[in-house]
Every structure is written in structure tokens, then in C-alpha cells.
Amino acid sequence: DAGVIQSPRHEVTEMGQEVTLRCKPISGHDYLFWYRQTMMRGLELLIYFNNNVPIDDSGMPEDRFSAKMPNASFSTLKIQPSEPRDSAVYFCASSFGLAGGTGELFFGEGSRLTVL
Amino acid sequence: GESVGLHLPTLSVQEGDNSIINCAYSNSASDYFIWYKQESGKGPQFIIDIRSNMDKRQGQRVTVLLNKTVKHLSLQIAATQPGDSAVYFCAESRSYNTDKLIFGTGTRLQVFP
Image (tube, rainbow over all chains, first blue to last red):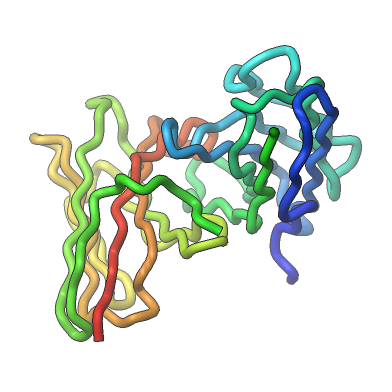
């Protein structure tokens, strides 16, 4: 298996532009997570899906952020409009199951976003 | 690309020595703990986990110790190798679920030959 695949790996954009980050989870995994990593706040959970349905989006910072999972093999995280404080590394992770599971989240390599 | 900030606590060890990375967790209700390793430019990778009904768990070259009394977790790496150089995060959650994982700030491990 190729693991969790994220794109783009790097994105540089200007303030006000729309940014779309993409994720392909590991086939067969029923949970998908979006995390954000910054120097100041470390790793933060933004939102997660179970069987393509958003379960908890309480970590999404503002209405400018939205996430979708139209099918089991694809998810997007969109920021519109983007701001410099959104600059971070965004990780997608997937897992099979939750309760009683091993806790093994499989992370992608991340999308580094820089908003100028 | 760098995954975390410049002011992480850093542990420097010589190749072949044992490493001990410590973590203080915040929530006394947490009952599930995980260690992740993050190499530069990559996402975190699961190393080992432990549930609150245990105080020690061993893996391959790694051991996790849990002291619930003082809310302390440690990761011991035996015979540290250059490939162990990375940032190590502990994570805690309640009720064995990974949906509410709270990650610590991380410790950078540097291994010198």
C-alpha cells in the first residue's frame, strides 16, 4: 500500500486566495483525520470523518475552513480566503477503527502551506 | 521540511547509548497513551502504545513506562541508532479512542556517531 497520499506537498499563496489540500487515505480505513501543525500550537486536530461523514469539526478554526469527503478514497480541506496565520503543515491521517484500536494513525507526509 | 519549531527540548545521545524521553500529560482522566516519531519532512509515525491498566510495555528496542500517580510517561530506546534521530511526541486520550488524541509538544532526539 502506498500509504496516505497528500497533495500538494508545498503551496505558497497570497493572502485572500483559496487553498485546497487533498488527501487519499489508505484503502479500507474508515476514519480520516485532518491535523494542523505549527510551531506555536503543535499538532491540532481540525476535523475527522467516519465512513465519509464528518463526526467532529470542533477543531476547525473558523468558517474560512471547510472539509469534505465525497467518497472513501478522497478528502479535501479548503481555506477560503487564506490568511498568513494559516501558514502551517497540514496532515491527513487515516485509521481502521477507533475504540479498542491500537491508536495507530497513519499520517501522510503533509502539505506545507505558506500564505504571504 | 521542518515539522516543528526551533525551541523543542532536545536530547543528544551517542550512538549505542540508551535514550529516555519523558512526557508529562495533563489529564488525569486520560487512559490511553501513544508515542509517535516524526522525522524531518514526514508525518508522525506510531511507535508504541500503552493503556492505563499497564505500567510498562515493551516493543522492539523501545519500552514505554507509565506512572499514573505523577502523570508521567517515558519512552526508552535501547542502543540508540542514527535512524532514531527525530522528534518524539507523546499523545494522550480518553476511552482508548484516537479521535480525541492530544499531542504533546515533542522532544527532539539527536544521535551522534
